[in-house]
Image 1 (tube, rainbow, N blue to C red):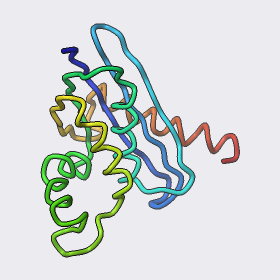
Image 2: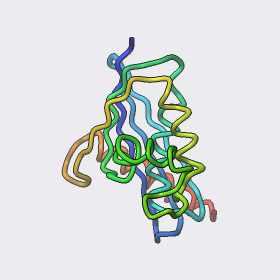
Image 3: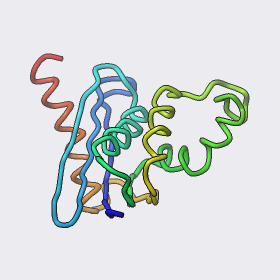
Image 4: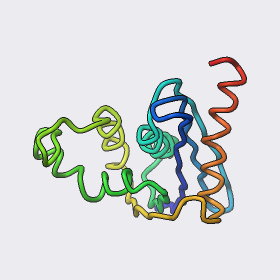
Length: 148
């Protein structure tokens, strides 16, 4: 099974506001960068979207080391998602899970892979995390330059 390293990040100018997501992937000496933009979103949505889009480009099942500075993303997958599903996509406080649409898409992606979810401190000099952050911000800057 191929081992892929992925770094993801989301960014928002205002929360909610203009948002971008970025992903940096590395496999066997090859690197790939992805990014995208949404005009009215939240930082948490962009964090989850980054993971979705990175996993979508994998053409076959992979062993993945996914690094994120988002506890919302990491804990959502490894701690909360199972309980949300059991509770009909409601939180422990019986409220609807925010961003359910994205969590369902992410769930459909993660079943294909063996993923280790790693947390890294944001803006602390980790090169992969810094690049993912740059990509998310490039997405916002490019969209704003185009008047989006």
